[in-house]
Image (cartoon, rainbow, N blue to C red; front, side):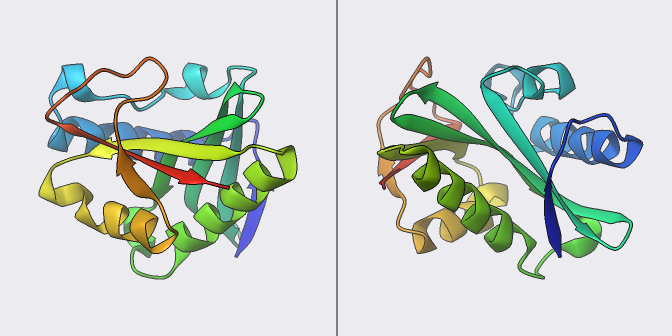
Length: 151
């Protein structure tokens, strides 16, 4: 698997982001969806990576800079055709390493509270993320869980 910095211009990556947004809509009410669309992921404070096996995109993830010492994980997604192969773990390792390289002292994320998000929460827990109160512009929401990790 190769993880590449991505400008979000390719059709395969756009399709994966579409799959991600559809998944969020399937499991979360509209007011509780915090996933970024393609335009949101192209914002200057967001760095986006895609993961590839040969010419097939298998996953993606992004890092949003909240300030000089705090980053947020965004748009973590494994292609539905590549679940349970360690794709998300590799992408998360990459994002954590990048956050450390940037000198961030904290890395945070928002994820769903529903059962569909349990595998993601277990992955984040395995990396040492703990549950926390809302950060940045987030508000308390029964459909959201917030996690953070000191780096």
